[in-house]
Image (cartoon, rainbow, N blue to C red; front, side, top):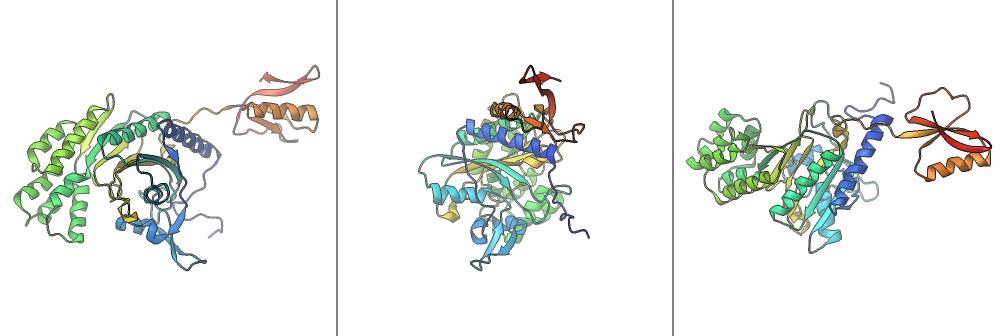
Length: 382
Protein backbone atom coordinates (compact mmCIF):
# COMPACT_ATOMS: atom_id res chain seq x y z
CA UNK A 1 0.00 0.00 0.00
CA UNK A 2 1.25 3.50 -0.82
CA UNK A 3 2.54 5.46 2.14
CA UNK A 4 0.33 8.43 1.30
CA UNK A 5 -2.97 6.52 1.26
CA UNK A 6 -5.10 7.73 4.16
CA UNK A 7 -6.94 5.43 6.61
CA UNK A 8 -10.51 4.42 5.76
CA UNK A 9 -13.08 7.18 6.32
CA UNK A 10 -10.35 9.81 6.71
CA UNK A 11 -9.88 12.34 3.91
CA UNK A 12 -8.14 15.55 3.00
CA UNK A 13 -10.34 18.59 2.46
CA UNK A 14 -9.42 20.33 -0.78
CA UNK A 15 -9.61 24.08 -1.47
CA UNK A 16 -13.17 24.49 -2.73
CA UNK A 17 -14.74 22.44 0.06
CA UNK A 18 -12.38 23.86 2.67
CA UNK A 19 -13.38 27.40 1.68
CA UNK A 20 -17.06 26.47 2.05
CA UNK A 21 -16.49 24.83 5.44
CA UNK A 22 -14.52 27.80 6.74
CA UNK A 23 -17.12 30.32 5.58
CA UNK A 24 -19.84 28.25 7.27
CA UNK A 25 -17.79 28.02 10.45
CA UNK A 26 -17.49 31.78 10.60
CA UNK A 27 -21.18 32.37 9.81
CA UNK A 28 -22.40 29.87 12.41
CA UNK A 29 -20.08 31.08 15.16
CA UNK A 30 -21.19 34.63 14.37
CA UNK A 31 -24.82 33.48 14.72
CA UNK A 32 -23.99 32.03 18.15
CA UNK A 33 -22.19 35.20 19.17
CA UNK A 34 -25.30 37.14 18.17
CA UNK A 35 -27.18 35.21 20.87
CA UNK A 36 -24.48 35.95 23.47
CA UNK A 37 -22.54 32.66 23.30
CA UNK A 38 -18.85 32.70 24.24
CA UNK A 39 -16.34 30.67 22.24
CA UNK A 40 -14.31 28.00 24.05
CA UNK A 41 -11.59 25.75 22.62
CA UNK A 42 -11.23 22.48 24.54
CA UNK A 43 -8.16 20.35 23.77
CA UNK A 44 -8.23 17.55 21.22
CA UNK A 45 -6.99 15.04 23.82
CA UNK A 46 -7.09 14.73 27.58
CA UNK A 47 -6.98 12.08 30.28
CA UNK A 48 -9.37 9.29 29.36
CA UNK A 49 -10.96 9.21 32.82
CA UNK A 50 -12.04 12.84 32.41
CA UNK A 51 -13.00 12.56 28.75
CA UNK A 52 -15.40 9.65 29.29
CA UNK A 53 -16.81 10.73 32.66
CA UNK A 54 -20.56 10.24 32.65
CA UNK A 55 -20.88 9.52 28.93
CA UNK A 56 -21.46 5.79 29.06
CA UNK A 57 -20.22 3.00 26.83
CA UNK A 58 -21.12 4.66 23.52
CA UNK A 59 -18.35 7.25 23.65
CA UNK A 60 -15.92 4.73 25.11
CA UNK A 61 -16.21 2.57 22.00
CA UNK A 62 -15.90 5.62 19.72
CA UNK A 63 -12.78 7.01 21.45
CA UNK A 64 -9.22 6.49 20.23
CA UNK A 65 -6.87 5.81 23.16
CA UNK A 66 -3.12 6.27 23.57
CA UNK A 67 -0.51 6.40 26.32
CA UNK A 68 0.94 9.75 27.40
CA UNK A 69 4.73 9.51 27.08
CA UNK A 70 5.13 12.14 29.84
CA UNK A 71 2.90 10.72 32.57
CA UNK A 72 2.23 7.14 31.51
CA UNK A 73 -1.52 7.74 31.84
CA UNK A 74 -4.06 6.79 29.20
CA UNK A 75 -5.26 9.66 27.04
CA UNK A 76 -8.25 9.84 24.72
CA UNK A 77 -8.84 11.75 21.51
CA UNK A 78 -12.24 13.35 21.95
CA UNK A 79 -15.19 11.77 20.14
CA UNK A 80 -17.60 14.47 21.34
CA UNK A 81 -16.99 17.94 22.77
CA UNK A 82 -19.99 18.22 25.11
CA UNK A 83 -18.35 16.43 28.11
CA UNK A 84 -15.35 18.75 27.74
CA UNK A 85 -17.52 21.86 27.69
CA UNK A 86 -19.35 20.56 30.78
CA UNK A 87 -15.97 20.22 32.49
CA UNK A 88 -15.07 23.79 31.51
CA UNK A 89 -18.37 25.08 32.92
CA UNK A 90 -17.99 23.09 36.14
CA UNK A 91 -14.33 23.58 36.97
CA UNK A 92 -12.87 26.50 35.05
CA UNK A 93 -15.69 29.03 34.73
CA UNK A 94 -17.61 27.94 37.84
CA UNK A 95 -20.25 30.63 37.32
CA UNK A 96 -23.34 30.76 39.48
CA UNK A 97 -25.66 32.03 36.76
CA UNK A 98 -26.22 31.20 33.12
CA UNK A 99 -23.25 30.34 30.88
CA UNK A 100 -23.69 30.31 27.11
CA UNK A 101 -20.80 28.53 25.39
CA UNK A 102 -20.05 27.56 21.80
CA UNK A 103 -17.21 25.66 20.14
CA UNK A 104 -15.96 24.33 16.83
CA UNK A 105 -13.24 21.74 16.32
CA UNK A 106 -12.47 18.27 15.01
CA UNK A 107 -13.52 15.11 16.84
CA UNK A 108 -12.31 11.60 16.05
CA UNK A 109 -14.34 8.38 15.90
CA UNK A 110 -12.99 4.85 15.91
CA UNK A 111 -15.80 3.85 13.56
CA UNK A 112 -17.87 5.92 11.12
CA UNK A 113 -21.38 6.78 12.27
CA UNK A 114 -22.78 5.85 8.85
CA UNK A 115 -21.48 3.89 5.81
CA UNK A 116 -20.08 6.96 4.03
CA UNK A 117 -19.44 9.19 7.04
CA UNK A 118 -16.06 10.59 8.00
CA UNK A 119 -14.30 9.47 11.17
CA UNK A 120 -13.09 13.04 11.63
CA UNK A 121 -16.17 15.26 11.85
CA UNK A 122 -15.73 19.00 12.37
CA UNK A 123 -18.12 19.45 15.28
CA UNK A 124 -19.76 22.80 15.94
CA UNK A 125 -22.07 23.25 18.88
CA UNK A 126 -23.65 25.59 21.38
CA UNK A 127 -24.73 24.95 24.97
CA UNK A 128 -26.55 26.75 27.78
CA UNK A 129 -25.68 25.91 31.38
CA UNK A 130 -27.58 27.03 34.46
CA UNK A 131 -31.21 27.32 33.33
CA UNK A 132 -33.67 24.45 33.72
CA UNK A 133 -36.67 26.10 32.08
CA UNK A 134 -38.22 25.70 28.68
CA UNK A 135 -36.89 29.11 27.74
CA UNK A 136 -33.38 27.65 27.34
CA UNK A 137 -34.74 24.70 25.34
CA UNK A 138 -36.46 27.07 22.95
CA UNK A 139 -33.43 29.34 22.63
CA UNK A 140 -31.13 26.48 21.70
CA UNK A 141 -33.66 25.26 19.13
CA UNK A 142 -33.97 28.74 17.65
CA UNK A 143 -30.19 29.11 17.45
CA UNK A 144 -29.90 25.75 15.69
CA UNK A 145 -32.54 26.85 13.18
CA UNK A 146 -30.88 30.23 12.68
CA UNK A 147 -27.58 28.42 12.10
CA UNK A 148 -29.12 26.34 9.33
CA UNK A 149 -30.74 29.47 7.91
CA UNK A 150 -27.31 31.13 7.82
CA UNK A 151 -26.06 28.10 5.91
CA UNK A 152 -29.03 28.47 3.51
CA UNK A 153 -30.28 24.98 4.33
CA UNK A 154 -33.91 24.21 3.91
CA UNK A 155 -36.71 23.64 4.08
CA UNK A 156 -36.00 22.04 7.45
CA UNK A 157 -38.02 19.64 9.59
CA UNK A 158 -37.64 19.55 13.37
CA UNK A 159 -38.25 16.14 14.94
CA UNK A 160 -38.95 16.30 18.68
CA UNK A 161 -38.78 13.66 21.41
CA UNK A 162 -38.17 13.48 25.14
CA UNK A 163 -35.89 11.00 26.91
CA UNK A 164 -38.03 11.19 30.06
CA UNK A 165 -40.84 9.23 28.42
CA UNK A 166 -38.80 6.04 28.07
CA UNK A 167 -37.11 6.68 31.42
CA UNK A 168 -40.47 6.98 33.16
CA UNK A 169 -41.66 3.69 31.66
CA UNK A 170 -38.47 1.95 32.82
CA UNK A 171 -38.40 3.52 36.28
CA UNK A 172 -38.76 1.04 39.13
CA UNK A 173 -38.35 -2.04 36.93
CA UNK A 174 -35.69 -4.57 37.90
CA UNK A 175 -33.78 -4.70 34.63
CA UNK A 176 -30.13 -5.42 33.97
CA UNK A 177 -28.07 -3.10 31.81
CA UNK A 178 -28.24 -5.66 29.01
CA UNK A 179 -32.03 -5.80 29.23
CA UNK A 180 -32.28 -1.99 29.10
CA UNK A 181 -29.98 -1.92 26.09
CA UNK A 182 -32.13 -4.54 24.36
CA UNK A 183 -35.25 -2.43 24.97
CA UNK A 184 -33.51 0.65 23.58
CA UNK A 185 -32.38 -1.25 20.49
CA UNK A 186 -35.88 -2.59 19.87
CA UNK A 187 -37.35 0.90 20.22
CA UNK A 188 -34.78 2.39 17.85
CA UNK A 189 -35.63 -0.29 15.28
CA UNK A 190 -39.36 0.00 16.05
CA UNK A 191 -39.30 -3.77 16.50
CA UNK A 192 -42.69 -4.48 18.10
CA UNK A 193 -42.24 -8.27 18.21
CA UNK A 194 -38.96 -8.00 20.14
CA UNK A 195 -40.52 -5.47 22.52
CA UNK A 196 -43.42 -7.83 23.18
CA UNK A 197 -40.98 -10.55 24.21
CA UNK A 198 -38.80 -8.20 26.28
CA UNK A 199 -41.76 -6.74 28.18
CA UNK A 200 -43.71 -9.95 28.75
CA UNK A 201 -43.22 -9.88 32.55
CA UNK A 202 -43.70 -6.12 32.99
CA UNK A 203 -46.66 -4.47 34.76
CA UNK A 204 -49.52 -4.02 32.31
CA UNK A 205 -49.40 -0.21 32.15
CA UNK A 206 -45.63 -0.10 31.55
CA UNK A 207 -45.82 -2.83 28.93
CA UNK A 208 -48.69 -1.26 27.00
CA UNK A 209 -47.00 2.14 27.16
CA UNK A 210 -43.69 0.80 25.82
CA UNK A 211 -45.43 -1.07 23.01
CA UNK A 212 -47.40 2.07 22.13
CA UNK A 213 -44.18 4.06 21.59
CA UNK A 214 -43.44 2.06 18.45
CA UNK A 215 -46.40 3.73 16.71
CA UNK A 216 -46.17 7.18 18.29
CA UNK A 217 -44.50 9.15 15.53
CA UNK A 218 -45.82 11.71 13.08
CA UNK A 219 -47.37 15.16 13.28
CA UNK A 220 -48.84 17.03 16.28
CA UNK A 221 -51.68 14.51 16.61
CA UNK A 222 -49.09 12.12 18.05
CA UNK A 223 -49.08 14.07 21.33
CA UNK A 224 -52.84 13.73 21.77
CA UNK A 225 -52.63 10.04 20.96
CA UNK A 226 -49.76 9.63 23.43
CA UNK A 227 -51.79 11.25 26.20
CA UNK A 228 -54.43 8.55 25.67
CA UNK A 229 -52.16 5.52 25.30
CA UNK A 230 -49.33 6.20 27.74
CA UNK A 231 -49.71 5.85 31.52
CA UNK A 232 -50.38 9.18 33.27
CA UNK A 233 -47.03 9.27 35.03
CA UNK A 234 -45.89 12.76 36.10
CA UNK A 235 -42.72 12.72 33.96
CA UNK A 236 -44.64 11.62 30.88
CA UNK A 237 -47.36 14.23 31.39
CA UNK A 238 -44.73 16.96 31.79
CA UNK A 239 -42.74 15.78 28.78
CA UNK A 240 -45.79 15.79 26.50
CA UNK A 241 -46.80 19.25 27.74
CA UNK A 242 -43.30 20.60 27.14
CA UNK A 243 -43.14 19.16 23.62
CA UNK A 244 -46.46 20.78 22.77
CA UNK A 245 -45.25 24.14 24.13
CA UNK A 246 -42.00 23.99 22.14
CA UNK A 247 -43.79 23.05 18.92
CA UNK A 248 -46.21 25.96 19.36
CA UNK A 249 -43.27 28.39 19.27
CA UNK A 250 -41.81 27.07 16.01
CA UNK A 251 -44.07 29.00 13.68
CA UNK A 252 -43.52 28.29 10.00
CA UNK A 253 -41.35 25.24 10.70
CA UNK A 254 -42.36 21.68 9.87
CA UNK A 255 -42.44 19.80 13.21
CA UNK A 256 -42.77 16.06 13.71
CA UNK A 257 -42.53 13.82 16.76
CA UNK A 258 -40.97 10.42 17.38
CA UNK A 259 -41.50 9.49 21.02
CA UNK A 260 -39.38 6.33 20.69
CA UNK A 261 -36.34 8.16 19.27
CA UNK A 262 -33.25 7.35 21.35
CA UNK A 263 -30.57 8.08 18.76
CA UNK A 264 -27.57 10.18 19.67
CA UNK A 265 -25.60 10.23 22.87
CA UNK A 266 -26.85 8.42 25.96
CA UNK A 267 -26.49 11.43 28.26
CA UNK A 268 -29.72 13.12 27.12
CA UNK A 269 -32.11 13.51 30.05
CA UNK A 270 -35.05 15.51 28.68
CA UNK A 271 -36.17 17.16 25.47
CA UNK A 272 -34.32 15.91 22.38
CA UNK A 273 -34.45 17.16 18.82
CA UNK A 274 -33.13 16.35 15.39
CA UNK A 275 -33.24 18.66 12.40
CA UNK A 276 -33.47 17.21 8.92
CA UNK A 277 -32.84 18.91 5.59
CA UNK A 278 -33.46 17.67 2.03
CA UNK A 279 -30.60 15.65 0.58
CA UNK A 280 -29.26 14.43 3.93
CA UNK A 281 -29.59 10.74 4.76
CA UNK A 282 -29.75 11.53 8.48
CA UNK A 283 -30.31 14.51 10.75
CA UNK A 284 -27.77 17.30 10.26
CA UNK A 285 -28.29 18.68 13.78
CA UNK A 286 -28.95 16.81 17.02
CA UNK A 287 -29.44 18.30 20.44
CA UNK A 288 -31.44 18.36 23.60
CA UNK A 289 -31.27 18.59 27.37
CA UNK A 290 -28.59 16.76 29.37
CA UNK A 291 -28.87 17.93 32.97
CA UNK A 292 -26.77 15.03 34.30
CA UNK A 293 -23.66 15.59 32.19
CA UNK A 294 -21.87 17.80 34.71
CA UNK A 295 -22.65 15.70 37.78
CA UNK A 296 -19.46 13.64 37.47
CA UNK A 297 -17.45 16.84 37.64
CA UNK A 298 -19.02 17.66 41.00
CA UNK A 299 -21.38 20.30 39.64
CA UNK A 300 -24.75 19.09 38.40
CA UNK A 301 -26.12 21.97 36.35
CA UNK A 302 -29.08 22.24 33.99
CA UNK A 303 -27.72 22.02 30.45
CA UNK A 304 -29.12 22.05 26.94
CA UNK A 305 -27.36 22.26 23.59
CA UNK A 306 -26.86 21.01 20.05
CA UNK A 307 -24.07 19.98 17.73
CA UNK A 308 -23.57 19.45 14.01
CA UNK A 309 -20.84 18.29 11.66
CA UNK A 310 -19.76 21.07 9.30
CA UNK A 311 -18.26 18.54 6.89
CA UNK A 312 -21.63 16.84 6.53
CA UNK A 313 -23.50 20.13 6.35
CA UNK A 314 -21.55 21.45 3.34
CA UNK A 315 -22.73 18.44 1.36
CA UNK A 316 -26.41 19.40 1.62
CA UNK A 317 -26.41 23.21 1.41
CA UNK A 318 -25.79 25.43 -1.63
CA UNK A 319 -22.22 26.37 -2.36
CA UNK A 320 -21.65 30.09 -1.92
CA UNK A 321 -20.56 32.16 -4.88
CA UNK A 322 -16.84 32.74 -5.13
CA UNK A 323 -15.74 36.07 -3.72
CA UNK A 324 -14.54 38.38 -6.42
CA UNK A 325 -10.82 39.10 -6.56
CA UNK A 326 -8.31 41.30 -8.32
CA UNK A 327 -5.60 39.92 -10.57
CA UNK A 328 -2.30 41.77 -10.40
CA UNK A 329 1.07 41.36 -12.10
CA UNK A 330 4.04 40.30 -10.04
CA UNK A 331 6.69 42.93 -9.75
CA UNK A 332 9.31 44.52 -7.51
CA UNK A 333 8.39 48.15 -8.24
CA UNK A 334 7.60 49.92 -4.94
CA UNK A 335 4.56 51.62 -6.47
CA UNK A 336 3.08 48.25 -7.54
CA UNK A 337 3.77 46.60 -4.20
CA UNK A 338 2.24 49.56 -2.37
CA UNK A 339 -0.88 49.41 -4.53
CA UNK A 340 -1.29 45.67 -3.84
CA UNK A 341 -0.78 46.18 -0.10
CA UNK A 342 -3.32 49.00 -0.04
CA UNK A 343 -5.99 46.90 -1.77
CA UNK A 344 -5.42 43.98 0.62
CA UNK A 345 -5.68 46.30 3.62
CA UNK A 346 -9.10 47.31 2.28
CA UNK A 347 -10.25 43.70 2.41
CA UNK A 348 -9.72 42.85 -1.25
CA UNK A 349 -8.25 39.54 -2.43
CA UNK A 350 -5.36 40.31 -4.75
CA UNK A 351 -3.84 37.40 -6.67
CA UNK A 352 -0.38 38.21 -8.01
CA UNK A 353 0.33 36.26 -11.20
CA UNK A 354 3.76 34.68 -10.96
CA UNK A 355 5.97 34.83 -14.06
CA UNK A 356 5.15 32.09 -16.57
CA UNK A 357 1.73 31.31 -15.07
CA UNK A 358 -0.38 33.98 -16.69
CA UNK A 359 -2.86 31.52 -18.26
CA UNK A 360 -3.56 29.38 -15.20
CA UNK A 361 -7.07 29.16 -13.75
CA UNK A 362 -7.24 29.68 -10.02
CA UNK A 363 -9.78 29.19 -7.25
CA UNK A 364 -10.73 32.86 -7.13
CA UNK A 365 -13.17 34.80 -9.27
CA UNK A 366 -10.94 37.54 -10.60
CA UNK A 367 -13.33 40.04 -12.15
CA UNK A 368 -10.87 42.98 -12.03
CA UNK A 369 -7.25 43.56 -12.87
CA UNK A 370 -4.61 45.92 -11.51
CA UNK A 371 -3.01 47.81 -14.38
CA UNK A 372 -0.74 50.77 -14.81
CA UNK A 373 -2.34 53.76 -16.50
CA UNK A 374 -0.84 57.23 -16.85
CA UNK A 375 1.85 56.29 -14.36
CA UNK A 376 -0.66 55.13 -11.70
CA UNK A 377 -1.72 51.63 -10.64
CA UNK A 378 -5.53 51.43 -11.00
CA UNK A 379 -8.15 48.69 -10.85
CA UNK A 380 -10.15 48.00 -13.99
CA UNK A 381 -12.96 45.57 -14.75
CA UNK A 382 -12.00 42.55 -16.84
